[in-house]
Image (cartoon, rainbow, N blue to C red; front, side, top):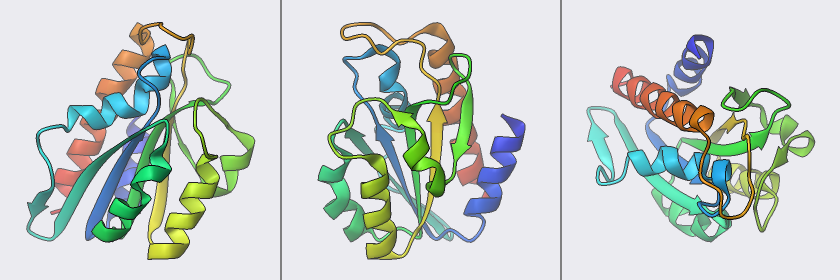
Length: 167
């Protein structure tokens, strides 16, 4: 997680406005990872610090429905958090490069994540950073696993700490 934090900080060092988008389904266990991370920011709304502004978006299973709101916010950087089959043990977290999006299985989206990311990057000329969390189970009606709950807490803390360090 330390190298992920370092990489995230490096990718965000020039950020002026950061959109944080949580993706997933709270009805399918660990698929809720992205929205759980974003939900931890709930109540904070948009935060303005000296030079950095960020806004949280909870995209659930149709993040493309928020593309208009994200475009109006006009972020310089878009951070997406989602459950992704990384072929790793449950709860493992990894930064996913845009060019890898075709080769990684994301759990429950109406529109492929790659299509939405490419659209937003081209529309608003922002940098996209995708954080994947390995699910254990995505069975309908299941609860998030302990491994993913721990990963959610770590990813939230990491993002929060990186954002604080940037202003």
